[in-house]
Length: 220
Length: 241
Figure 1 (cartoon, rainbow over the protein chains, first blue to last red):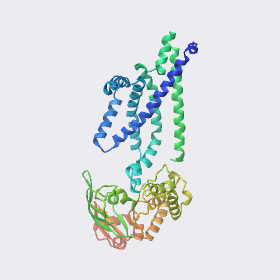
Figure 2: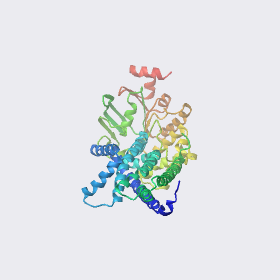
Figure 3: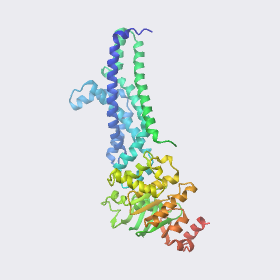
Figure 4: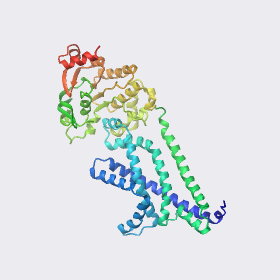
């Protein structure tokens, strides 16, 4: 196997990795924020909010990310009447997609907390909001951390799909290198190694965070 | 202090409370006994609106709890509750469990809240557990902490929902001791329990419930030694041996 193309083309991989990291970071942040909102909407007693959130989650989970990406890419500029940068549209598509999965994870996490916890908090005179922020959400967060970490890893990998709308991420630049060097195979191995390095690091970091948070639970 | 009139509670087709009328006076220790499914826990949970009554009214210290205009959170500050499953907050230390509501709801500063918590811990003999987490404690210790947590809001009445039913037998005593002390200090208490000994010794009044109604009530001597209603006789015959 010959990796000598790396001398000339390593910059493509560096730039691509930077874009992929940027895309993933914003995707995770906005996905999490929008996800929390959808989760709270789905748990709320308001029928309208609840059905809107449910419908959104079902549609996003039931359609391919590729299709969603195209819909956002061609749809949003028309809808808003503004020409966004490709990267912005990529982040929007990824965030909107991730939000649906994050919402389901958070909802399940909140529902997994014994209802006695809410009752105990309310019986002490705490409002629903106070009980949620002090009692329910901190416990739910600890429970959903593994699932959330998994979702972030999926997001990083899935972000490769933005290459089809011409965003110069790691995957797109890898394809460029493959074309320029007439080597269809070995650049892919480099890309795979970089993706793996990113996700593996994240997975280890999540593991450390999890262990920290579990420090209080010595038994059971 | 608490007046319940014509209280009804339906869970879809199940009629759990079927017209409860009673009043609980200042300093009284009211013990509610009865077979499972008789509605005693539901009645207790209606008193602080953890269950919303389908019909009827509850008046607490002159304010209607069942009136939606009144702030239920404010009323709950005055009513402590102790649960069968303790329901301590597992992600917080004992100290944080006790001080959370005084600090967040009553807006006490940390020093004041801590001082209250420490004096309560001393009263229940667990000051050495202040920085332990709930899952490092035994069931009896957990329940005593839960009582302290409720007392930290200095409530006017304490509601106990089968506080010893989830405990190992050898731990029942330590929890009952705390409750006895509390009663002796003049706390108004409503206790749902299967501990007939406690009912006899501490109760100022016993309510016997069956099928969502108060079938018989009176002072413990009367109810235990000379029950009038056949359902009461039958129930006591089964539990007192």
